[in-house]
Image (cartoon, rainbow, N blue to C red; front, side):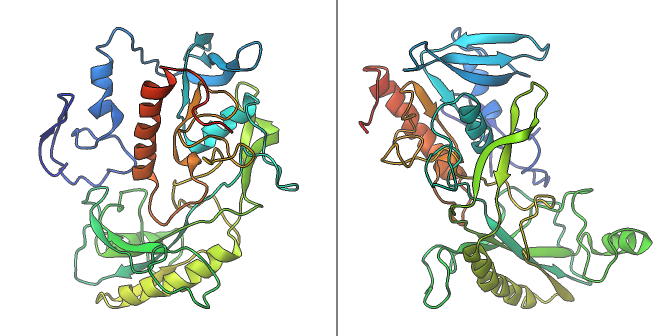
Length: 368
């Protein structure tokens, strides 16, 4: 929020104080439009609403004839298991857990990368990130002060905004400079040729923490047959259920994309008057250890045909008509931009269909 605001439900949001902890922390200032700020306090006043915290859904249960979802089985903080009956089930955990719950509940055909058949877990996409960090001697950038969306973005290399002739890839990405990510402990930018630990590293962190900024490339990710999600055959969680297994690596399209866009970010960074520039580009195979982005898509994709998608255009399961799925798992590809805005739009679209179509006449909203 740039200024104080009261939303249509009467809940108050305060102006942002630019504390810099926006993306990965809750907002004690009530400036972020998170559900716990914008709608949950109103819902909690309703007699037909219950918020069950510290609980985890174990499975989506089906009616004896397998024609519909009968509810969900969940476990609470005490380890007690409950069955919650439901006329409508909305699966909105996260793209990865949504996929896992469908697989665990044996809803939809799991994707098989060898045959190309199956849909659940198919089209897993990530994003291709790179950047160029600028280090200054005198200028203070104070990157620890900022808001989640505070920055400048250029779209010249996003999507089809530029000529791809002879480049050997499709898609693109935005190039941006944000003041939002210099969180203490987590953020410690140092120039090249600095050890990763020890006194020299500490000295470099101390000298550069307040005097750096980054020009980032937020690249798209296209689906590939070899990138998918399934249940791990070996590892299980605390309840004995298989964990989700991610099989993923950067494709040739990803590599060509980042090789084309990263030099543009480097050129911009070199023109910003710093002492030196450090280029961070994805090389070799995908590594899940260093944080890059949390914009996962695919696994529960939307489409017009049950043979190639998990849900129809209303986010309704092809297999169980009273099961709806939300989230970025609906996307068959991952664009350069974050999926958040479209995820919200699809959620409104789906809920409108549930209220004004499904509840009036339960059943498939789209005939296969």
